[in-house]
Image (cartoon, rainbow, N blue to C red; front, side, top):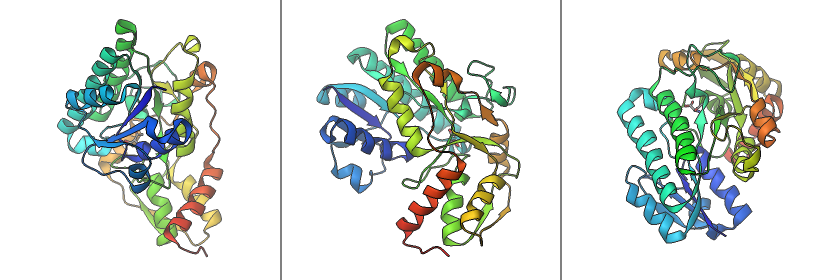
Length: 320
Ligand code: AKB
């Protein structure tokens, strides 16, 4: 089979997606690549791993040639909060990285998965039941790179026939790798603090609704979209995909039902609050459901139960 290349394989999605892909397609068929950060032991020991820099096109091309790569999951990206602190870095990594991946894909005829985000929307987007095709005027550098990325992927498909596909991910929740500098990170941090300290100080205000998804669903979404029948895809890129929508007080209440001593207070971070307020409260993901059968398995209740069980096992903390 043609090999699969994963960029950003040490990151939140990459470290887990690499392992699921290796289980599905075989360890040697999935090449994990990352920049600077060494992937965790399981990724490092279960198949080929390389350090590459997506802003250097030759480093991507070398991998694709060496391993005869047929599909690239391009996950290397700077997340929203870090991007607002260092917009130049975000532009460089998110835009040049994607452009280089698409150029290599064009030359070597690879398929490309590109994760966009709820960050591709902005304050003038309808924030409730956000349509698949709607106003996109984000006011963050992260959002600018995501909208430009969506358009670039569409362009490479239409102009050069590169098989590009992608979803707009909401906040992703996982017990394995920690997120690195996003606005939705609170929905992961809250579990660690609830289990370790029985309390959490949230940097978003009560009432700040955002779409979220549990990682097993997010990984399945990527693979199912890449395996979908292309004749059925009207959109190809940037599918709205969500699993649940909640505000901080709702996840806190759900945790409290399992850990009754848990309490939460608030210390609002104005940068992340402003970003969150510019993003949808809940997206309409009917296009994904109709065109490639998207259906999440986890809701707030089942995700919370699983997160608490898995994190307490991981931290070896007995719950009381
Ligand atoms: C972030 O918060 O930056 C990401 C995202 C929603 O794209 N988790």
